[in-house]
Image 1: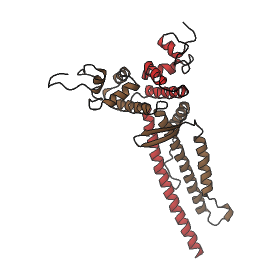
Image 2: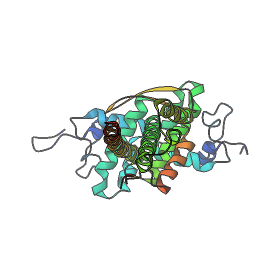
Image 3: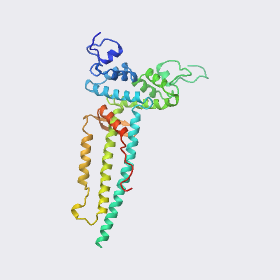
Image 4: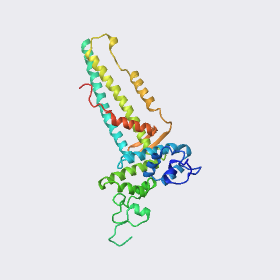
Length: 121
Length: 192
């Protein structure tokens, strides 16, 4: 067996051809990356997805797939959708707090202006 | 598919062209009137992977799991490069910007409070955050947050359109860890 097989071909126990679609993105030094992606998406689906993308976009696609696969392994019910939900909640809370703080500023500024007017009169 | 007593096969078994068993794992979540739902999940994840994932979950969690898988699959079909990660990146930028605005507003409250505590001091000691200071603080935050890839994403979620600069998944995971470690929302106002 070719000792320089990519992580994908090592995992799938097959020969790693020169034009292997996985090899640029799954180096043998990181076997977990492919294992995780394969567990969630399957090698066939990932291969199809990559084939449908221009070469310059494939690295980013693999990274995002890897991220989503890791999220799904860590949270089998919600995956990365849980993170989206968390962020949306955080945005709502921060917006509420910001509105409250800005209202307090408006009240404080109004009081301050009134105080200054009273002092001059 | 059978006599008048039999129900129609679920969307999954229809697509996979197989008999829909009584205990079909997909049937509760992929009704026959919504074929697109299973089609998109099958396209991205594959029926056997979805089946395995559902089998590993308790029954009461499977509906939520299916919904999140459908969501992710839709995101991936709309954006084959970034999928859901594009939306996460956008939302994280939004959180950062809001937190910065909040910090500026809280600083302004503090300044006003200090003014109230020292009303008779010399004019030069009065601190004010004018529009220029606020803009400077907000701009420096924007530069930090936009120091990402230059790809612009058009991404539609149920709540609207997103344009996002994609941050690398490693930086997203770092932010996730930070979110878990600290409490970014300081709920108490400086007035209390």
